[in-house]
Every structure is written in structure tokens, then in C-alpha cells.
Image (cartoon, rainbow, N blue to C red; front, side):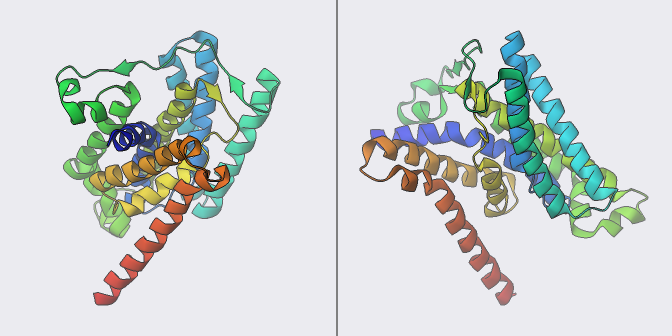
Length: 299
């Protein structure tokens, strides 16, 4: 029982960047644009955030830079796709490749290191103890004691739900994804809403990437390690709804937590264990495709 609670507790911490990236991707998906650049956006945010934090020791400044640079890249992706009419899939892949290359090049230029860069001077992320909940035997262990970004990812998800379903902007954004001519008939430009969705995804991915480097206090080339792609899967497995995103992200967080635990507790090849979250991603997508196909067949 203790092992399961520990895995769940660690999984809740691991799910934060995945949940944030998926929340940002939800906006572009609702606008009718599949943003496959979540991986690259996270990577850029992680690098620029940790660089400024290491220079200034200020987490807020680092987060601000990481988010702003990521939003600029997301805005460029939106501009190329929406205004220059580039293929969204090719543009997304190009963004991922650009992010993977530019972060390694800049890391070498700044630190003369193409491998792992450790930042001992970065302040560690403090743990938040929730006074009342922390006293509850099981619930307190699961929910209390995480770093602040875990709770912030939950807050962002709640805000996303409110914006998408309780505001005029959200209604119009979702209508763009269903039939953009409806918005045209109201005298609105669908491209503006889609561009806003790209910028929101950049904001969320910038925060998601920052979590990775700040929690490790280090930068590793391609530190995202497929988490952006997993976030994309989470959007669909969560049925493109905020609560579904939370559950799907928790499942993948638990899978990664399990793989980390299994490396030291089981006599299984490390490569196989490290592949567990990605194998789960593949299985989940196959299952989702089968269920969707059968549902459409019945309709």
C-alpha cells in the first residue's frame, strides 16, 4: 500500500508539465488546429528559463523570459501557419527540430558544454504543505507536499475550463474549431482566435518546460524526452475536456513514476523500463482509435 501511495504521489508531481502542455494544446485543438509543436515549445521554455535563473537567481525573471520566448516561437508558428498558409504539420515538426537544435547550440556557446549542465546556484523549488489536508492520512500524503507548480498547473486547468466554457471568447474559439464560417457571419476573423490559441499554448508550454529544468536544477539536451508528444496524446485520451486531461495526465504521470521505481526495484533491463511510458502512450492511442472508430460506426 505504501508503495502505491508513493507512486501516486510521485506521479502527481511528474504529471504537472504534461498537464500544462496539454492544457495549452487544448486551446489550439479547440480552435481546429492540431499543434504538434508542444515538444519544441516546452524545450525552448525550459532552456531560456534556467539560463536567466542561473544568472540572476530570480525564479520569476526566469519564468518570465522562458514564457515570453516560448510565446514568441508559438506566435511565429501561428503566423507561418495561419497567414503564410504553411502546412501545420510540417511547421510543427520544423518547430520541434528548430528547438532541439537551437537549445544545444546556445548551451554550447554559453557554457561550452553539449551534455548535462548542472546549476547548483538555482534555488530549489519549495514544497507546499497544505495545513488541513496534510493531516488526513491518505489524502494528505497524495495532495500535500508538492512544489508550487503542481498546484499552479491545476489552477491553470481550472482557468482554462472557465475560459473555454464560461466566456464569450471561449464560445467563439470553440465555434472556430467546429465551423469558422459562423464566426465570419458575426464579423469576426477566425485567424485572430486561432492565433490567440497558439499564444496561449506557448504560455502553458513555457511554464511546462520551466518545471523540468527548475525541478532538476539542470539542463539536459532534449530534456522534454517526448513529454510534449505525450501531452498531445493526453488531449485526445481526455476527450478534449479539462477533467479528462487531468485524469489522462495522471495516468501517464503514474506510468513514469512506476518506471522510475522499477529501475531500482526490479531486475528488468533499464531500456525496457524507460520505454514503459511511451509504450503506454502507443497502447492508449491504439485503444482510443479503436473506440472512436466503433463509436462512429454505430452512429
